[in-house]
Amino acid sequence: MRYLITVSYDGTNFKGYQKQPRERTVQGEIEKALKEINGGIKVDIHASGRTDAGVHAMAQRIHFDLEKNISLDKLCKGLNSLLPEDIFVRNCAEVPDDFHARFSAIGKEYIYKLNMGEYNPLERNYVYQYNQKLDVVEMERAMKYLEGEHNFKSFTKTDEEKEDYVRTISQTNLIRDPKNLNKITFVFVGTGFLRYMVRNIVGVLIAVGEGKLRSEEVIDILKKEDRRAANKTASPEGLYLKNVFY
Amino acid sequence: MRYLITVSYDGTNFKGYQKQPRERTVQGEIEKALKEINGGIKVDIHASGRTDAGVHAMAQRIHFDLEKNISLDKLCKGLNSLLPEDIFVRNCAEVPDDFHARFSAIGKEYIYKLNMGEYNPLERNYVYQYNQKLDVVEMERAMKYLEGEHNFKSFTKTDEEKEDYVRTISQTNLIRDPKNLNKITFVFVGTGFLRYMVRNIVGVLIAVGEGKLRSEEVIDILKKEDRRAANKTASPEGLYLKNVFY
Image 1 (cartoon, rainbow over the protein chains, first blue to last red):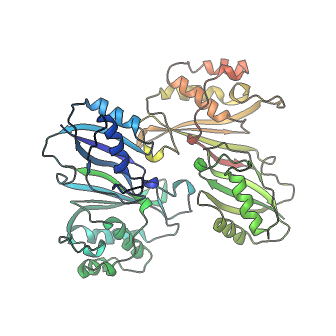
Image 2 (cartoon, each protein chain N blue to C red):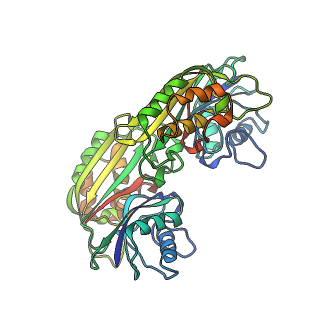
Image 3 (tube, rainbow over the protein chains, first blue to last red):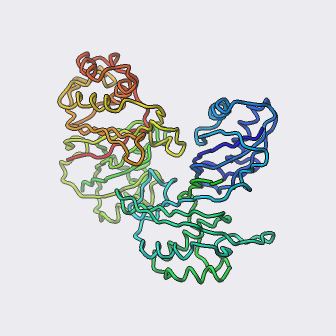
């Protein structure tokens, strides 16, 4: 029986999603809990994609197979009773045997939160504390140049093995909190995202917001297909995997 | 010269505001930073009041005296460069010699955040995760009975030395987040608050919201002037010292 779970987590105290020896990871914690539920037999889990250290998830999706049949309610409650308080299983579902959390996904939504106002110690792990004004109109304009199908090689860590850097960003948005205009959220919906892609895009958007780049120069960065053409990677704590679409 | 600083902090990783040997406290961290700024000479600081372990502050006020004259900008920047990332000095001001952060205060505002919806691991240290529905209308009604001058002995830790349990709550409010009605904020403005008073009030409000108490029974609890008449203390992570009025 194949199960799909929807999981939220606080990335602050994890060395990322992916399992690593001797490190506290989201995958490691979930596999440990599942092993207990599965009578001591190891369960391999498959996420929609990894998230890096410090990056959060509102609805990460993970599938796995269990030999024994377990009710969805029992699975959810069992996992949540075993998991640490910074991971929560929001939903459990049964899926067909050919469903795959990563390969069946048709899209994802990421958001990135940034504070242009005064440093807020209470949100230091959840909102990037930029703490200076940015040109929001220019950043919004720059985001629109990224919409559509592009080669995003300039926005990722290049990898010898990797061949395909083409992705489609179907929607971007810049939302200002009406109660606090200094708090902005960048929204990205797309078919898929390369490693560090959202954080590298936000790095470029910040350079645009600072006036170091004009918004239309984003087009040149895309065209160069070279990581060195873009700016530095924005820090992880502002990033959230918000949703995965199937 | 007497200085008044406005400080925000994340209470999660502190054993409360008040200095204690071998414990990480807000007072301890600020005094350590001030000592460094003051050329190695110890500085005693005085807050508007203590906050307990896990309780946050948006605008705690603290005064202290320095022998040497230091510009406000330098003091603010110096402190923030020395303080850990979970404490932030929002403002520095000079005040008259007879000003006292605690005794000059004429009022305070506390808020308490509670989530009636699904457990959110990202807010576990910042919003009390009650995760069940409560009768919001009844809770709001109960809050109104607390407004005005009352003896709040039932809502605090009784102390042999303490004589006066009379305080005035000038304003209460129950705010629901329009984007997520499950997120509620209790607001309390008053002349002063006794130890655990807000959390004990919230404990009673939760009992009202659960239907275990009728809203008007709050009056009986007040009248009893006995801690055993009230319900359990609500957990600290939902509580914020929002402001101090002078």
